[in-house]
Image 1 (cartoon, rainbow, N blue to C red):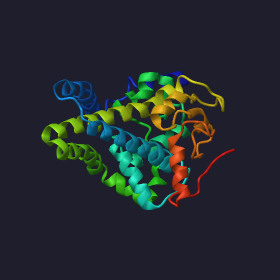
Image 2 (cartoon, rainbow, N blue to C red):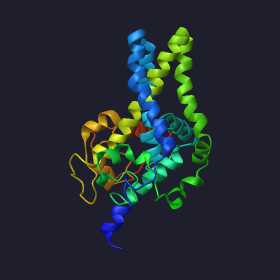
Image 3 (cartoon, rainbow, N blue to C red):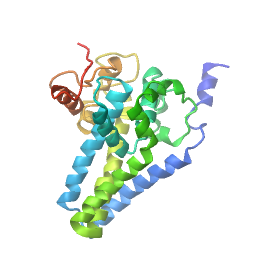
Image 4 (cartoon, rainbow, N blue to C red):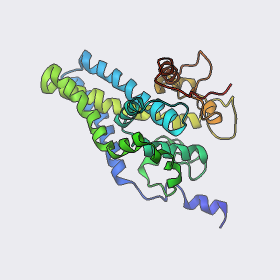
Length: 284
């Protein structure tokens, strides 16, 4: 069988649909697109709603970039279990699967970048690499990519209790809003800091898989499709320096220069200065 035939057989169009994931993300999208402006029209959002949105966007975003990505997938630093737990709760609140499954997929992405086994293969177009890969069943999942992760008790704990953790990330903003202004306040905080924040964090993360593999510069290497897009770093806490990251995967910095906007590396370095992170890996 030729390579061309294999490529034709294994494509997004020929894979089975993942109905459950499709419905979940449809609910988030509809909630953000319709629920957010509808509530704003009738009630408007309070200062507390916007504050909670900002706090949870930062917390859940860093839970992905520092916790899921640089800690679990690439082991670019180490930290105490309780710090890891805090990061993984933030990652769980981001609605992007458990750290075990997320990191296993990401390890495979680096091992098989731009190949059929790459979960978010950018050669199949923007839509697939941005979010379309979530809506089809992946025939290339291999337990070997999760073997190391399964030896970490904190990772296993978060994977086991991922659903309660995820739900708590939506209940928390509702409770804060409810205590501030009753049911109306609870609904507003739930929509903005819960559903809306989830939608925007999801799409900012998706931009790394799509935009940073399609548009941008490749100053550090051209062995795969990864690209540096500094402006993506502004919404992803430093993840936009993606070409550097693919060339030096274990570096705790994605933006290696002091002036690169990379809050994730600043958090990791800050934790190391107060004894809450160690073994920071970097390349000159």
